Length: 179
Picture 1 (tube, rainbow, N blue to C red):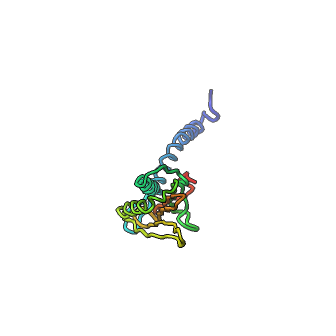
Picture 2 (cartoon, rainbow, N blue to C red):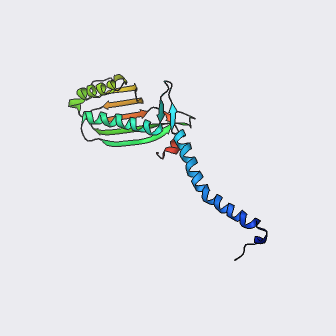
Picture 3 (cartoon, rainbow, N blue to C red):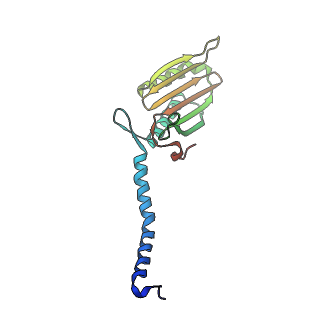
C-alpha cells in the first residue's frame, strides 16, 4: 500500500513524525504531572521548614489517634480526615480535620483530661482548659501549636470527642481527593 504523496517523500515523513509525537505525548504528560504535583504538595513555613499536604494530614491523624489511645475505649471516626481550605477565599492552601468520638466516662474525666494535656504538651502544644458554668460543668481542653492549628478534647459525661485541625499546607482541598 502506498501513502498519498509518497512519491515526493514528504507525506510519509510527516506521518511518521506525528506517530512519534503521539507516542511521546502521554509520557511527557506523566513526567510533567509528577514534577508539578511534587512541587505543589509542599509549603514553606515561617521558620523555613517544608510542610507537605500528606504530612499535614498524617500529623493530625497521628495526634488525634495517639490521644484516643492514651485515654482508651472504643473510638469511632466522626469526621475525616477531611480536607478544607485554610480560610475564606484561600484556594492554594489546605488543612485537614479529623474527629473521633466515644461514650463519655464521667468517673475518669478528670484523669483523662490530665492524660491528654500531658501528651499534647510533650508535642509542643499550648493547652487551655475550659468548662461551662452550672452545677455540672462540662470540661474540655483546647490546644494550638506543634503539628496543629487547633486540637480539642471534650470530656462530657455522655460523650467524649477528640478533634484536630492540621497546620496549613500548599494545595487545594479539591486536589487531595478528600471531602
